[in-house]
Image (cartoon, rainbow, N blue to C red; front, side, top):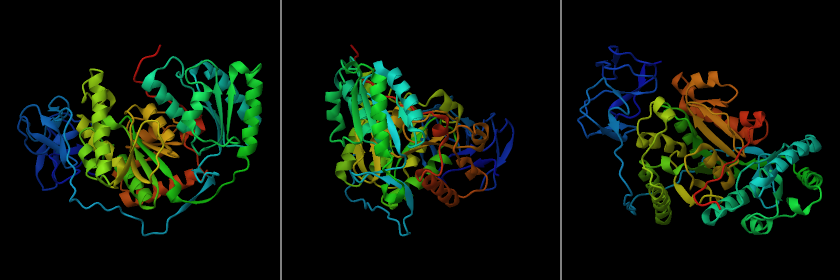
Length: 498
């Protein structure tokens, strides 16, 4: 294995594939020997060409920031000598002359074994979900899920409750966010049956919440107001039994890959995220889109600095305008709260070798591959078009994974360089950017993209990961979050609570 990797011929930096010490010499691709001027941690950047103060430093073939001072070859490039080159809200223009053509698969499109629902949607799990309208009854719903699991006795994949603290004393956008998000979860096809539990006096009462759910099948969605029942646990278990009996009517059958929807997310990124796991996930996104399926990319603040790459791939001018609004509206959200737009990356990202937000964004957006962007989806809403969709949500791991699930993702591909145990409402595949993490956290990590640095090729790993996902969608495999029972949600909040 080489000591370093250069991601683009235009780059002025290489990425250290091992810790490099002050005074060591490394051989570059043109035969030059470069003396390293600092101790450089694994995954961090070493400058190979001189850069004057104020000039751009390139990685991925794009600027990742401006040099704070004159920099000599061999120096460690990081936050101490590199600053963001990003500004505030920008103007963008649509290039109507650019050719935009979506790649389609010329191969036989594979199938997976899924549950076809009466409305034509497909689930990859046959579960009972308990959705509470308000946080006051989290514990009631928790007990119902536990007893319901025992009662169902393996007749469904699982009985799950998603605790949250909201639904009461919320106003305006906050209440709408809660209703839309929970309503979209109710409609998720991984849930064969859904029990909606209300308290009875909350803002998000059952009757107004039905408006957020929209039309529903009474066999699939049951409602219970706890204050109206003498024994809400007895009544809840009765309704869960009815839902279980309905769920038993579904059996797995072959379904084309075009029915699959995947969410794309990264968290705890490191210097290898944009080299291994994110590009690998990008190939999966492109393969799925070419087969007629759907990929959903979110984390809007982590598009800042790379947004023009996505805008150039808008399928038409209307979608281009929607991407502009998506980015600028999120910047206004930062400004409205008096926060610095480009105050990123996180401490963990910096430890891993990421110095600026544009560097993080250029790595992050690789998860979307090279497909055209077909639609932009508001927070809490469900995707309605196939292809690559952009979803409005923040970078926070659990908030964005919940939003991806609510948008309709059957599976979330979560790339990480540092690791995390959590899981969202749907199978959350943890893909490590490096082999050290995969070996260290076998109970967290489901797939190791670090093998790309150890002799495995990108096409080989892309085929392997897609085969894994088809088995996962078919119910042959479980993710670690499913096995460990880590199923959580978090709801975006931007307003006043009474």
